[in-house]
Image (cartoon, rainbow, N blue to C red; front, side, top):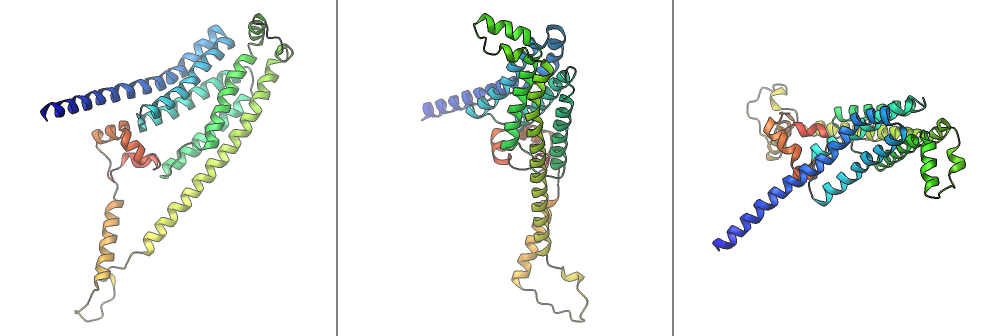
Length: 293
């Protein structure tokens, strides 16, 4: 029995170490994309559009890799989710700023990205859940393809030379077009998708606002006026039914739950990195992460 207990403890300890190591690995991959937001600027300035296009392929690939690894290794967390979202936005906007220096149409894409960010921020501030929708994820993929393709469009001579070297000549006529025109053609579908996603997120936020207000109305309508607020009838013998007492107890319990108390620093750090907590509460508003139940 003692030997079996020792083996079990040894396995649990090994699992714990592996779990922490895997979590660090996945978050490190996400952090690489955060560093890419800074690195892409000197890459573009010194090496040009073709090198920037290759770099963006690598950095955008980390977005797919970290998500797949997090789910497969069971190391999802609120910290990883927040870092992933912020890294995506920062890297995408920096790339769009660089592209806007050669084609002003990307300024409109930047404005739409910031608009979507503002809609989600305001929704989160009101206590809603602003996680990505299917349309939002599809738009992100389209944006990544547009950014990579636009960098390569503005390095058309280099791309054409490489393709001809491997005997691919079918794209020669396309690559001979004006690079600004090519990147504009790529940007237009992204603009349309961003407009749709902004509208979709706005509808989702409004729907959650209505649902939250309805829940408040239901809670208020279930409340019973306390007996000490009732007019004095001159009689001291008042009989309260058991159902009224139970209803009052429920109201007091609900009011107690509504009192918001911030988590301690230790509790917040635990919940930011704990996988089980994330899986249980990922559909809640992120604002609730900072408060005790």
